[in-house]
Length: 270
Image (cartoon, rainbow, N blue to C red; front, top):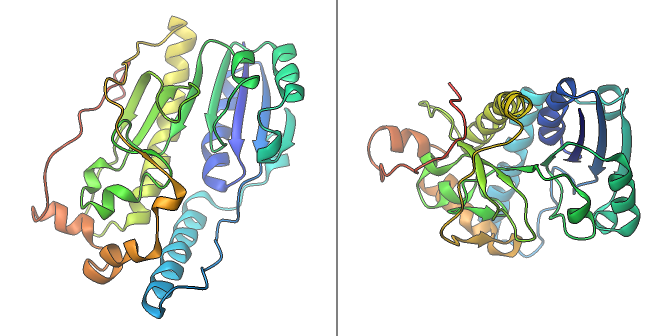
């Protein structure tokens, strides 16, 4: 059985995507170069927002380095054909042709931009995207941040779904949220989501290889698509100034809304 993997270049993407390889006889790997893990601090911020911005992304880097370590692309994918591209070359006729010629049975996507035609139509029927966010509530960008901003850390989770031309809108095959524990920071929860997703994709692939298909849940509501421009450093005041990055503690102490998301899975993941 053959598979195509679309991966971003960040360690969180490679950490999950590398676990897919062992389940297929032959795998084509497309890696899209992403922005720097540490973004540049905007020059027009107040000192308060500048401090929070730098704290937020530095803390993320520290947590992710601890969990994922340093990952060497060539070492992990040494037995696979690798196509390295930038975002401008993701949806090109050239890439679509290479994918069509490869003739894969399964496609897994985590960490690259929205895949559109002509590439989309060249992919196999089952083309599963891992979205770090719970659809339909949190689609698009920074979707593990917004649940914390709205004081709903229990809505930080992941969605595996079929891809369409609309972001994070395809039929859902599996969702999960991590176990929240006292002391968890926003980035601890994010890392837990990725760790759980790595475990879950293995179970989902085993299910696919046995059954040849997934049960799916249609997204009946549009929800909201969060864009990069929706985020401003001032939003971080809620996380760091008001709650000192202890929103999970407040939730577990029953000081916040206890409403839980209704999740879907095509398999018993336990």
